Length: 83
Image 1 (tube, one colour):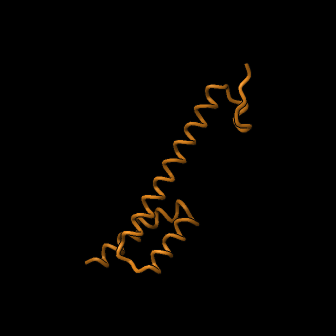
Image 2 (cartoon, helix red, strand yellow):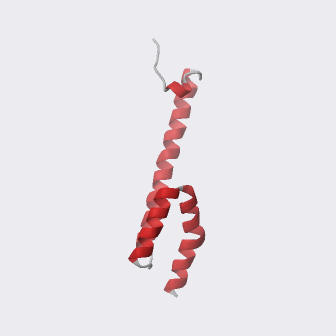
């Protein structure tokens, strides 16, 4: 019986194609969890609404860069606002 795999993984043996697809799925789910956690962190911060919108747009348009910038710059900035 022949199994159909994703065309990009057709050159891999059948068990490896499934492993690669599974790893990609796990990474995608983890990335979505990170984006949700960052969005919750932004929405719970003490920044004004305009800056929250700017950060959310930055996160959604630049993905990895936006997440890194939030953790390096944005969170520290909100901590300083609270004191």
